[in-house]
Length: 189
Image 1: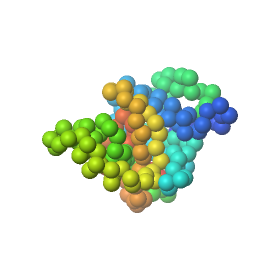
Image 2: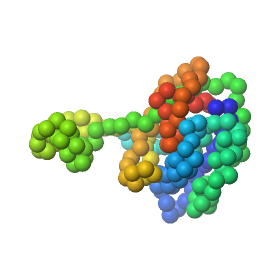
Image 3: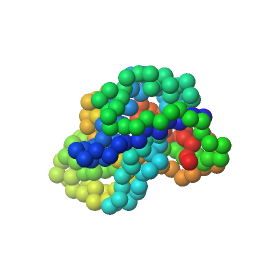
Image 4: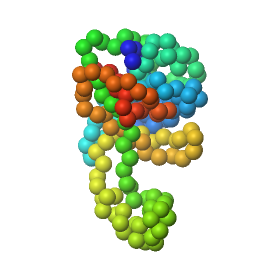
C-alpha cells in the first residue's frame, strides 16, 4: 500500500454525480473480480456522512503497490467512462499519514426479500418477519453509498461504505473485489 491513484469525476450536466460514481465503482468491481485482486483497496477521500449529506464524493482513490496499480490500469476497465473521469498518475503515498479500515456496512432495510429469508430461517410467517424487521429498518443510515451490480450474482444493491477510525499504524490483510476489507487498512491523507 505504498502507492495510490486518484480518479475524479468530471461534472456532467446530464448525469448526477452519485450515478457516475456508481457506474465507475461497478466497473472497478468487475475489473477486480476479473483480476481476482485481493491486494487493491479503495477509499473515498471526499465522502460525507450524515442522513441528509451522505455522499461518496467525486473522487475514488485506489491503493496498492505501483506495479499492481499499473497492471490494473493497463486493463481497459474504464471503457465508456473516460469522458466522465480525470485520471491522475500513480503516486507514492506521503510519509506522514494515518490509516483506516474501509469496509462494507450492511443494514436491515426491511425489504420484502430480506423478510422472506428471515421468515424461512426462523420458521415464522412473512407478516411476522416484516413486523419484527420494521423497527431496525426505521433507523436512518448516515453512511455514503454507491449503487453497484455484483459480478458474481448480477444483483444490484446499495453498497454502504464505512471509513473506520484513523490509526497510527497500518494493518495487513486481504481486500474483497470491491476494494474493501474488514481488517486491512489503507493510507488516509
